View (cartoon, rainbow, N blue to C red):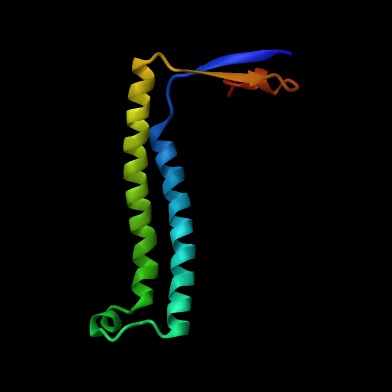
Length: 110
C-alpha cells in the first residue's frame, strides 16, 4: 500500500472566507424565505407599524443574506488567519493520503 504524507502549511484565508460567505448567504436566503412564508401564512407579522413601514418580510429577505455574508466572511477570515498562524508556529499538520490511480501525482502541478 503506497501512502503519501504531505504537510499542510497554509490555507488561503480569503478564498475560504469567500466560499463560507457564499454558503452562509444561500442558507440564510433559503431559511428567511421559508420563515417569511410561514409567518405570513400563519399571520405572525405583528401589529407594529414599523414592520409595515419597512416592508415587513421583504426587508429581511434583502438584509439577512447581506449580513450573513458579511459576518461569515469576517469571522471565517479571522479564524483561518489564526489557524495559519498556529500552523506556522507548529511546522504544519501532517496529512496522509492513500495512492489511488495516478491522481495523487497531479497535486501541485497546476
